[in-house]
Length: 254
Image 1 (cartoon, one colour):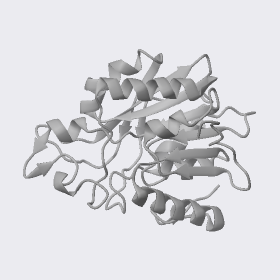
Image 2: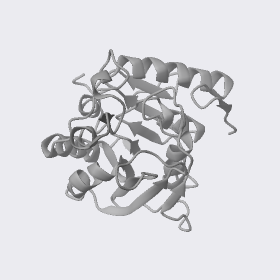
Image 3: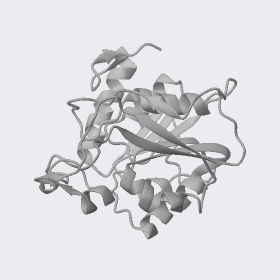
Image 4: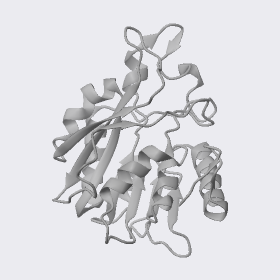
């Protein structure tokens, strides 16, 4: 798409594409996105931390389009630098970006973010329910909050520890709560701003899309997995028509 018209919205206020993150971003025009909220499918944790009979996320042999688990984003510094440079290019001058990290990827890649964006905060997501672990069981993940240019947040009294219960027995691998992405968008959408465009280059189950639509924002996202696109499309369309989130099985109040 050399003309880069990928984010034109017609009758609907969302667009999702079966593309990997970098391809999606390369097809988006310069300075056109207001907020990026994303949870990259990092390979580092699975490649380096073998726990018990399996890996940290599911059984590694089940990854890929035919298995239970998705293909990860191969998180070499080179790949990650390309990803971040594209994020910087597509974001508007006064904009925000939220990138989720597990503990391993935060150590291996967190410093790379600072080459492209000034990191303003590291937000701790307290998942309320204890998870897996070898020495200490995991109950938290991290969100790097950065800005392009100077833009405030909507509420300066917001703290940097967010207690939001993780999804138990999710219908999609590593499905994140809509509330988590909603809180990011709410913090970055100022009172008088309208028609903001939210982007998630690692769409997954579509939680960020639901959060964006709930926030009256436009949304663009992509995923390399056809299964992710199919699930997200059904989820988004059901939410638009019935205000029901089929993956969290509850009616979302606007």
